[in-house]
Amino acid sequence: MNQLIYYLKTELPNTKLKKMLSLMTKWQTAFIFQAPSNNTVRLAYGAIAEHYFAKDENQFSALKNWQTLLKKNLVNVKQTSENRLALVGSFAFDPNAEKENAFWGKLAQGYFFLPKYTVIKSGNSTELITCSFDAAALEKESSFFAQKLQNTPNYSLTLAEHIPFVKNNTALEQWTDAVAATTDKIQQHQLEKVVLARSLEATFSDAINPLAVWRKLTLTQPQTYHILLKTASGSFISSTPERFAKFKNQQIQTAAVAGTIKRGQTRTEDDRLGSQLLNDHKNLQEQKYVLEAIGKILRKHGLTVRHSKRPQLLKNTNVQHLYTPIMANGNFELFQVLRDLHPTPALGGLPREKALRQIAQVEPGTRGLFGSPLGYFQFDDTGELAVGIRSALLTANSIHLFAGAGIVSESVPQNEAAETQLKFQPLLHVLGDQNDEHTDIN
Image (cartoon, rainbow, N blue to C red; front, side, top):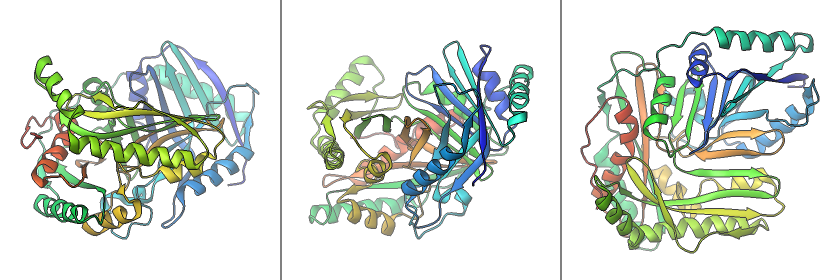
Protein backbone atom coordinates (compact mmCIF):
# COMPACT_ATOMS: atom_id res chain seq x y z
CA MET A 1 0.00 0.00 0.00
CA ASN A 2 1.39 3.39 -1.00
CA GLN A 3 -1.59 5.60 -0.25
CA LEU A 4 -1.75 8.36 2.35
CA ILE A 5 -3.79 7.52 5.46
CA TYR A 6 -5.05 10.48 7.47
CA TYR A 7 -5.90 10.09 11.14
CA LEU A 8 -7.56 12.21 13.78
CA LYS A 9 -7.74 11.87 17.57
CA THR A 10 -10.81 13.17 19.38
CA GLU A 11 -12.26 12.81 22.86
CA LEU A 12 -15.56 11.03 23.37
CA PRO A 13 -18.05 11.45 26.21
CA ASN A 14 -17.74 8.86 28.96
CA THR A 15 -19.39 5.79 27.48
CA LYS A 16 -20.14 2.42 29.04
CA LEU A 17 -18.14 -0.51 27.71
CA LYS A 18 -21.36 -2.44 27.05
CA LYS A 19 -22.44 0.16 24.49
CA MET A 20 -19.05 -0.09 22.76
CA LEU A 21 -19.42 -3.86 22.56
CA SER A 22 -22.96 -3.48 21.22
CA LEU A 23 -21.68 -1.34 18.35
CA MET A 24 -18.96 -3.89 17.62
CA THR A 25 -21.60 -6.47 16.66
CA LYS A 26 -22.04 -4.47 13.43
CA TRP A 27 -18.42 -4.95 12.36
CA GLN A 28 -17.04 -8.07 10.71
CA THR A 29 -13.44 -7.23 11.65
CA ALA A 30 -12.76 -6.08 15.20
CA PHE A 31 -10.30 -6.41 18.06
CA ILE A 32 -10.33 -5.98 21.86
CA PHE A 33 -7.33 -5.94 24.21
CA GLN A 34 -7.42 -5.59 27.98
CA ALA A 35 -4.46 -6.41 30.24
CA PRO A 36 -4.88 -7.97 33.73
CA SER A 37 -6.03 -5.61 36.50
CA ASN A 38 -6.05 -2.75 34.01
CA ASN A 39 -8.91 -0.31 33.62
CA THR A 40 -7.76 0.47 30.06
CA VAL A 41 -9.35 -1.37 27.15
CA ARG A 42 -8.49 -0.94 23.47
CA LEU A 43 -11.24 -1.62 20.92
CA ALA A 44 -10.80 -1.60 17.13
CA TYR A 45 -13.61 -1.42 14.58
CA GLY A 46 -13.08 -2.29 10.93
CA ALA A 47 -9.87 -2.51 8.90
CA ILE A 48 -8.58 0.28 6.68
CA ALA A 49 -5.51 -1.85 5.87
CA GLU A 50 -4.73 -5.48 6.63
CA HIS A 51 -1.89 -7.98 6.37
CA TYR A 52 -2.04 -11.76 6.12
CA PHE A 53 1.31 -13.53 6.40
CA ALA A 54 2.50 -15.84 3.64
CA LYS A 55 3.48 -19.40 4.45
CA ASP A 56 7.18 -19.77 5.35
CA GLU A 57 7.42 -15.98 5.74
CA ASN A 58 9.41 -14.42 8.58
CA GLN A 59 6.31 -12.94 10.14
CA PHE A 60 8.14 -10.57 12.47
CA SER A 61 10.21 -9.02 9.67
CA ALA A 62 7.11 -8.86 7.48
CA LEU A 63 5.14 -6.97 10.10
CA LYS A 64 8.05 -4.61 10.74
CA ASN A 65 8.26 -3.85 7.02
CA TRP A 66 4.51 -3.32 6.74
CA GLN A 67 4.46 -1.06 9.80
CA THR A 68 7.36 0.98 8.38
CA LEU A 69 5.55 1.38 5.05
CA LEU A 70 2.32 2.46 6.73
CA LYS A 71 4.15 4.88 9.03
CA LYS A 72 5.57 6.72 6.00
CA ASN A 73 2.04 7.21 4.69
CA LEU A 74 0.37 8.28 7.95
CA VAL A 75 -0.68 11.90 8.25
CA ASN A 76 -1.69 13.29 11.65
CA VAL A 77 -4.07 16.07 10.64
CA LYS A 78 -4.05 17.79 14.04
CA GLN A 79 -0.30 17.26 14.69
CA THR A 80 -0.96 16.13 18.24
CA SER A 81 2.17 14.92 20.04
CA GLU A 82 0.76 11.66 21.40
CA ASN A 83 0.23 8.86 18.90
CA ARG A 84 -1.58 5.79 20.22
CA LEU A 85 -2.63 4.52 16.81
CA ALA A 86 -1.62 0.86 16.50
CA LEU A 87 -1.62 -2.26 14.37
CA VAL A 88 -3.60 -5.01 16.09
CA GLY A 89 -3.81 -8.76 15.58
CA SER A 90 -1.91 -11.99 16.03
CA PHE A 91 1.07 -13.90 14.71
CA ALA A 92 0.84 -17.63 13.99
CA PHE A 93 2.46 -20.21 16.23
CA ASP A 94 4.23 -21.88 13.33
CA PRO A 95 3.96 -20.19 9.90
CA ASN A 96 5.86 -23.15 8.43
CA ALA A 97 3.38 -25.80 9.62
CA GLU A 98 2.83 -28.54 7.05
CA LYS A 99 -0.40 -29.81 8.59
CA GLU A 100 -3.61 -27.90 8.05
CA ASN A 101 -6.91 -27.48 9.87
CA ALA A 102 -9.69 -26.17 7.67
CA PHE A 103 -11.40 -24.39 10.58
CA TRP A 104 -8.57 -21.81 10.83
CA GLY A 105 -9.25 -20.50 7.34
CA LYS A 106 -7.23 -17.39 6.48
CA LEU A 107 -6.19 -16.99 10.13
CA ALA A 108 -3.89 -20.04 9.96
CA GLN A 109 -0.82 -17.92 9.14
CA GLY A 110 -1.65 -14.97 11.41
CA TYR A 111 -3.31 -11.61 10.74
CA PHE A 112 -2.85 -7.92 11.63
CA PHE A 113 -4.85 -4.88 10.62
CA LEU A 114 -4.86 -1.10 10.93
CA PRO A 115 -8.25 -0.17 12.39
CA LYS A 116 -10.63 2.26 10.75
CA TYR A 117 -11.73 3.31 14.24
CA THR A 118 -9.86 2.80 17.51
CA VAL A 119 -11.45 3.48 20.90
CA ILE A 120 -9.23 3.57 23.98
CA LYS A 121 -11.24 3.66 27.20
CA SER A 122 -9.32 4.33 30.39
CA GLY A 123 -11.38 5.03 33.50
CA ASN A 124 -13.65 7.96 32.68
CA SER A 125 -11.57 9.01 29.67
CA THR A 126 -12.47 7.77 26.19
CA GLU A 127 -10.35 8.50 23.11
CA LEU A 128 -11.30 7.92 19.47
CA ILE A 129 -8.77 7.63 16.64
CA THR A 130 -10.28 7.70 13.15
CA CYS A 131 -8.39 6.75 9.98
CA SER A 132 -9.39 7.66 6.43
CA PHE A 133 -7.99 7.82 2.90
CA ASP A 134 -9.95 11.08 2.47
CA ALA A 135 -8.61 14.03 4.51
CA ALA A 136 -11.67 16.14 3.75
CA ALA A 137 -14.03 13.46 5.07
CA LEU A 138 -12.06 12.64 8.22
CA GLU A 139 -13.88 14.88 10.71
CA LYS A 140 -17.26 13.87 9.30
CA GLU A 141 -16.39 10.16 9.61
CA SER A 142 -15.18 10.70 13.15
CA SER A 143 -18.38 12.51 14.11
CA PHE A 144 -20.45 9.81 12.41
CA PHE A 145 -18.82 7.08 14.52
CA ALA A 146 -19.21 9.09 17.74
CA GLN A 147 -22.89 9.65 17.01
CA LYS A 148 -23.42 6.03 16.07
CA LEU A 149 -21.82 4.95 19.33
CA GLN A 150 -24.08 7.21 21.40
CA ASN A 151 -27.20 6.06 19.54
CA THR A 152 -26.42 2.35 19.70
CA PRO A 153 -28.86 0.52 21.96
CA ASN A 154 -27.43 -1.72 24.66
CA TYR A 155 -27.80 -5.13 23.07
CA SER A 156 -28.01 -8.04 25.43
CA LEU A 157 -24.60 -9.60 25.96
CA THR A 158 -25.96 -12.27 28.26
CA LEU A 159 -24.63 -15.60 27.08
CA ALA A 160 -27.21 -18.35 26.93
CA GLU A 161 -26.17 -21.50 28.74
CA HIS A 162 -24.95 -23.64 25.88
CA ILE A 163 -24.56 -27.24 26.94
CA PRO A 164 -21.91 -28.31 24.43
CA PHE A 165 -22.16 -31.46 22.39
CA VAL A 166 -18.55 -32.57 22.25
CA LYS A 167 -17.97 -33.69 18.68
CA ASN A 168 -14.29 -34.48 18.87
CA ASN A 169 -11.95 -34.62 21.85
CA THR A 170 -9.09 -34.67 19.37
CA ALA A 171 -8.01 -38.23 19.97
CA LEU A 172 -7.26 -37.99 23.68
CA GLU A 173 -5.80 -41.50 23.66
CA GLN A 174 -3.55 -40.55 20.75
CA TRP A 175 -2.46 -37.43 22.66
CA THR A 176 -1.60 -39.35 25.84
CA ASP A 177 0.39 -41.80 23.70
CA ALA A 178 2.25 -38.80 22.27
CA VAL A 179 2.98 -37.61 25.83
CA ALA A 180 4.37 -41.04 26.75
CA ALA A 181 6.54 -41.18 23.62
CA THR A 182 7.82 -37.66 24.23
CA THR A 183 8.59 -38.44 27.88
CA ASP A 184 10.63 -41.45 26.73
CA LYS A 185 12.70 -39.20 24.45
CA ILE A 186 13.28 -36.75 27.30
CA GLN A 187 14.34 -39.55 29.64
CA GLN A 188 16.77 -40.70 26.91
CA HIS A 189 18.19 -37.13 26.90
CA GLN A 190 17.10 -36.48 23.31
CA LEU A 191 14.99 -33.53 24.53
CA GLU A 192 14.67 -31.50 27.72
CA LYS A 193 11.08 -30.27 27.52
CA VAL A 194 8.26 -30.27 24.97
CA VAL A 195 4.89 -28.52 25.22
CA LEU A 196 2.18 -30.65 23.62
CA ALA A 197 -1.19 -29.11 22.78
CA ARG A 198 -4.55 -30.64 22.06
CA SER A 199 -7.94 -29.28 21.13
CA LEU A 200 -11.55 -29.98 21.92
CA GLU A 201 -14.36 -29.25 19.48
CA ALA A 202 -17.93 -28.55 20.53
CA THR A 203 -21.01 -27.66 18.53
CA PHE A 204 -24.18 -25.93 19.67
CA SER A 205 -27.75 -25.67 18.51
CA ASP A 206 -27.49 -21.91 17.94
CA ALA A 207 -24.83 -19.34 17.09
CA ILE A 208 -22.43 -18.13 19.78
CA ASN A 209 -21.87 -14.40 20.24
CA PRO A 210 -18.09 -13.97 20.65
CA LEU A 211 -18.57 -10.57 22.29
CA ALA A 212 -20.78 -12.14 24.94
CA VAL A 213 -18.11 -14.79 25.53
CA TRP A 214 -15.44 -12.08 25.88
CA ARG A 215 -17.61 -10.09 28.27
CA LYS A 216 -18.36 -13.06 30.50
CA LEU A 217 -14.68 -14.00 30.64
CA THR A 218 -13.90 -10.51 31.99
CA LEU A 219 -16.30 -11.22 34.84
CA THR A 220 -15.26 -14.82 35.58
CA GLN A 221 -11.49 -14.55 34.90
CA PRO A 222 -10.54 -11.11 36.25
CA GLN A 223 -6.77 -11.68 36.63
CA THR A 224 -6.02 -12.48 32.97
CA TYR A 225 -5.68 -10.71 29.65
CA HIS A 226 -8.97 -10.50 27.75
CA ILE A 227 -8.43 -10.49 24.00
CA LEU A 228 -10.72 -10.94 21.00
CA LEU A 229 -9.76 -10.97 17.32
CA LYS A 230 -12.96 -11.00 15.26
CA THR A 231 -12.79 -11.73 11.50
CA ALA A 232 -14.82 -13.24 8.69
CA SER A 233 -12.91 -16.50 9.24
CA GLY A 234 -13.95 -16.72 12.87
CA SER A 235 -13.26 -15.12 16.24
CA PHE A 236 -10.17 -16.03 18.25
CA ILE A 237 -10.61 -15.35 21.94
CA SER A 238 -8.07 -15.67 24.73
CA SER A 239 -8.25 -15.32 28.50
CA THR A 240 -4.54 -15.78 28.99
CA PRO A 241 -2.51 -15.15 32.15
CA GLU A 242 0.74 -14.95 30.21
CA ARG A 243 2.45 -11.80 28.96
CA PHE A 244 4.68 -12.26 25.92
CA ALA A 245 6.17 -8.77 25.86
CA LYS A 246 5.36 -5.22 26.88
CA PHE A 247 7.74 -2.75 25.30
CA LYS A 248 8.72 0.88 25.00
CA ASN A 249 11.93 2.76 24.31
CA GLN A 250 14.90 0.77 25.70
CA GLN A 251 12.73 -1.43 27.90
CA ILE A 252 11.00 -4.75 27.47
CA GLN A 253 9.01 -6.69 30.06
CA THR A 254 8.17 -10.35 29.77
CA ALA A 255 7.56 -13.28 32.12
CA ALA A 256 8.32 -16.93 32.69
CA VAL A 257 5.09 -18.82 33.36
CA ALA A 258 5.34 -22.59 33.75
CA GLY A 259 4.07 -25.18 36.17
CA THR A 260 0.40 -25.64 37.03
CA ILE A 261 -1.77 -26.87 39.87
CA LYS A 262 -5.49 -26.46 40.56
CA ARG A 263 -7.01 -23.94 42.97
CA GLY A 264 -8.29 -25.09 46.33
CA GLN A 265 -11.91 -25.05 47.44
CA THR A 266 -10.94 -23.26 50.68
CA ARG A 267 -8.23 -20.74 51.58
CA THR A 268 -6.38 -23.42 53.55
CA GLU A 269 -6.50 -25.93 50.70
CA ASP A 270 -5.51 -23.23 48.19
CA ASP A 271 -2.48 -22.23 50.26
CA ARG A 272 -1.49 -25.89 50.64
CA LEU A 273 -1.69 -26.47 46.89
CA GLY A 274 0.25 -23.27 46.21
CA SER A 275 3.00 -24.34 48.62
CA GLN A 276 3.05 -27.75 46.97
CA LEU A 277 3.56 -26.13 43.57
CA LEU A 278 6.33 -23.85 44.87
CA ASN A 279 8.22 -26.91 46.12
CA ASP A 280 7.44 -29.44 43.38
CA HIS A 281 10.57 -30.60 41.55
CA LYS A 282 8.86 -31.33 38.24
CA ASN A 283 7.20 -27.92 38.04
CA LEU A 284 10.26 -26.04 39.33
CA GLN A 285 12.32 -27.76 36.65
CA GLU A 286 9.83 -26.70 33.99
CA GLN A 287 9.90 -23.11 35.29
CA LYS A 288 13.71 -23.07 35.39
CA TYR A 289 13.93 -24.11 31.72
CA VAL A 290 11.65 -21.26 30.66
CA LEU A 291 13.35 -18.61 32.82
CA GLU A 292 16.88 -19.51 31.73
CA ALA A 293 15.96 -19.66 28.05
CA ILE A 294 14.27 -16.24 28.06
CA GLY A 295 17.16 -14.67 29.96
CA LYS A 296 19.69 -16.13 27.53
CA ILE A 297 17.82 -14.70 24.52
CA LEU A 298 17.52 -11.23 26.04
CA ARG A 299 21.20 -11.13 27.03
CA LYS A 300 22.15 -12.20 23.50
CA HIS A 301 20.63 -8.92 22.35
CA GLY A 302 22.80 -6.99 24.79
CA LEU A 303 20.06 -6.33 27.32
CA THR A 304 20.48 -6.11 31.07
CA VAL A 305 18.08 -8.65 32.60
CA ARG A 306 16.54 -8.54 36.08
CA HIS A 307 14.23 -11.01 37.81
CA SER A 308 13.68 -12.54 41.25
CA LYS A 309 15.58 -15.67 42.23
CA ARG A 310 12.49 -17.68 43.09
CA PRO A 311 9.12 -17.81 41.30
CA GLN A 312 5.92 -16.54 42.83
CA LEU A 313 2.35 -17.76 42.38
CA LEU A 314 0.09 -16.46 39.64
CA LYS A 315 -3.46 -17.33 40.66
CA ASN A 316 -6.34 -17.55 38.20
CA THR A 317 -9.86 -18.76 38.87
CA ASN A 318 -9.22 -22.42 37.99
CA VAL A 319 -5.44 -22.84 38.26
CA GLN A 320 -2.31 -21.35 39.75
CA HIS A 321 1.09 -21.16 38.06
CA LEU A 322 4.72 -20.54 38.87
CA TYR A 323 5.48 -17.05 37.65
CA THR A 324 8.59 -14.89 37.38
CA PRO A 325 8.33 -11.33 35.96
CA ILE A 326 11.35 -10.36 33.82
CA MET A 327 12.58 -6.83 33.09
CA ALA A 328 15.23 -6.04 30.46
CA ASN A 329 16.80 -2.71 29.54
CA GLY A 330 19.07 -1.51 26.75
CA ASN A 331 19.08 -0.78 23.05
CA PHE A 332 17.36 -3.49 21.02
CA GLU A 333 15.73 -4.15 17.67
CA LEU A 334 12.18 -4.97 18.75
CA PHE A 335 11.06 -7.33 16.03
CA GLN A 336 14.30 -9.32 16.16
CA VAL A 337 13.94 -9.80 19.93
CA LEU A 338 10.32 -10.88 19.51
CA ARG A 339 11.27 -13.32 16.78
CA ASP A 340 13.93 -14.90 18.98
CA LEU A 341 11.58 -15.13 21.96
CA HIS A 342 8.82 -16.92 20.05
CA PRO A 343 8.02 -19.55 21.03
CA THR A 344 9.40 -19.53 24.54
CA PRO A 345 9.94 -22.94 26.19
CA ALA A 346 6.57 -22.35 27.90
CA LEU A 347 4.88 -23.01 24.53
CA GLY A 348 7.54 -24.83 22.49
CA GLY A 349 10.27 -26.60 24.41
CA LEU A 350 14.00 -27.21 24.64
CA PRO A 351 16.12 -27.51 22.61
CA ARG A 352 13.77 -25.32 20.60
CA GLU A 353 14.23 -26.76 17.11
CA LYS A 354 14.11 -30.37 18.27
CA ALA A 355 11.04 -29.63 20.38
CA LEU A 356 9.26 -27.97 17.44
CA ARG A 357 10.01 -31.00 15.26
CA GLN A 358 8.55 -33.26 17.93
CA ILE A 359 5.43 -31.07 18.11
CA ALA A 360 5.04 -31.21 14.33
CA GLN A 361 5.37 -34.99 14.37
CA VAL A 362 2.97 -35.90 17.17
CA GLU A 363 0.30 -33.18 17.34
CA PRO A 364 -2.70 -33.99 15.14
CA GLY A 365 -3.12 -30.54 13.55
CA THR A 366 -1.67 -27.07 13.27
CA ARG A 367 -1.96 -24.71 16.23
CA GLY A 368 -2.86 -21.69 14.12
CA LEU A 369 -3.05 -18.75 16.54
CA PHE A 370 -2.92 -20.88 19.68
CA GLY A 371 0.22 -20.12 21.66
CA SER A 372 1.02 -17.12 19.46
CA PRO A 373 1.85 -13.54 20.43
CA LEU A 374 -1.22 -11.34 19.95
CA GLY A 375 -1.81 -7.72 20.83
CA TYR A 376 -0.93 -4.30 19.46
CA PHE A 377 2.01 -2.29 18.08
CA GLN A 378 1.68 1.47 18.37
CA PHE A 379 3.42 3.64 15.79
CA ASP A 380 5.35 5.34 18.62
CA ASP A 381 7.16 2.00 19.16
CA THR A 382 5.29 0.99 22.31
CA GLY A 383 2.87 -1.88 22.65
CA GLU A 384 2.01 -5.14 24.35
CA LEU A 385 1.61 -8.77 23.33
CA ALA A 386 0.16 -11.68 25.29
CA VAL A 387 0.49 -15.41 24.61
CA GLY A 388 -2.70 -16.79 23.06
CA ILE A 389 -3.41 -19.62 25.49
CA ARG A 390 -6.65 -20.43 27.41
CA SER A 391 -8.10 -19.75 24.02
CA ALA A 392 -10.63 -20.85 21.44
CA LEU A 393 -11.70 -20.22 17.86
CA LEU A 394 -15.43 -19.55 17.47
CA THR A 395 -17.10 -20.06 14.11
CA ALA A 396 -20.90 -19.70 13.95
CA ASN A 397 -22.23 -22.45 16.25
CA SER A 398 -18.98 -24.34 16.81
CA ILE A 399 -15.95 -23.78 19.00
CA HIS A 400 -12.45 -25.25 19.04
CA LEU A 401 -10.76 -24.96 22.43
CA PHE A 402 -7.00 -25.32 22.87
CA ALA A 403 -4.77 -26.23 25.79
CA GLY A 404 -1.22 -27.43 26.26
CA ALA A 405 0.98 -29.05 28.91
CA GLY A 406 4.73 -28.94 29.44
CA ILE A 407 6.22 -32.43 29.18
CA VAL A 408 9.42 -33.14 31.13
CA SER A 409 11.11 -36.33 32.32
CA GLU A 410 8.74 -36.78 35.27
CA SER A 411 5.52 -36.27 33.29
CA VAL A 412 2.68 -38.78 33.65
CA PRO A 413 0.32 -38.86 30.63
CA GLN A 414 -2.87 -39.04 32.70
CA ASN A 415 -1.80 -36.07 34.82
CA GLU A 416 -0.95 -34.02 31.73
CA ALA A 417 -4.35 -34.85 30.23
CA ALA A 418 -5.97 -33.71 33.48
CA GLU A 419 -4.01 -30.46 33.32
CA THR A 420 -5.24 -29.68 29.80
CA GLN A 421 -8.80 -30.51 30.80
CA LEU A 422 -8.50 -28.06 33.68
CA LYS A 423 -7.28 -25.39 31.26
CA PHE A 424 -10.37 -25.95 29.09
CA GLN A 425 -12.65 -25.19 32.03
CA PRO A 426 -12.77 -21.35 31.98
CA LEU A 427 -14.24 -21.29 28.48
CA LEU A 428 -16.37 -24.40 28.97
CA HIS A 429 -17.80 -22.88 32.14
CA VAL A 430 -18.65 -19.64 30.33
CA LEU A 431 -20.48 -21.70 27.71
CA GLY A 432 -22.55 -23.41 30.36
CA ASP A 433 -20.74 -26.73 30.72
CA GLN A 434 -20.47 -27.51 34.42
CA ASN A 435 -18.70 -30.84 33.88
CA ASP A 436 -15.44 -30.80 35.85
CA GLU A 437 -14.45 -34.35 34.90
CA HIS A 438 -10.72 -35.11 34.63
CA THR A 439 -9.57 -31.99 36.47
CA ASP A 440 -7.47 -33.56 39.23
CA ILE A 441 -3.75 -32.81 38.95
CA ASN A 442 -1.37 -34.63 41.22
